[in-house]
Length: 67
Image 1 (cartoon, rainbow, N blue to C red):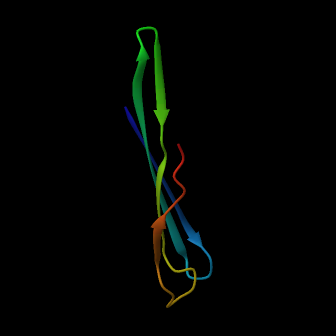
Image 2: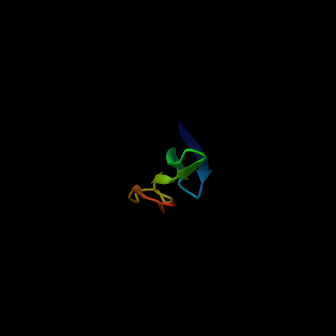
Image 3: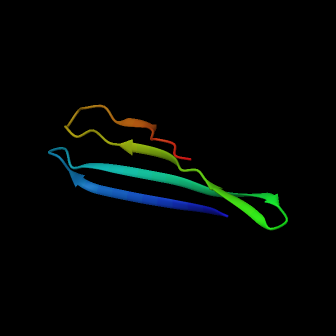
């Protein structure tokens, strides 16, 4: 199973900037024994932000990865 999260914030700062955040959250099951399963969930994040000021540079990067 894989979950996706999308967030878009717009109208920020004097340059009417926008921020887009994307998170991918796969759930990976592992069988420990016949009676016990371990579910692991990682979070992989990407972020894009347009310039906060007119004429500035846009930014793209990876966010924190959680296990």
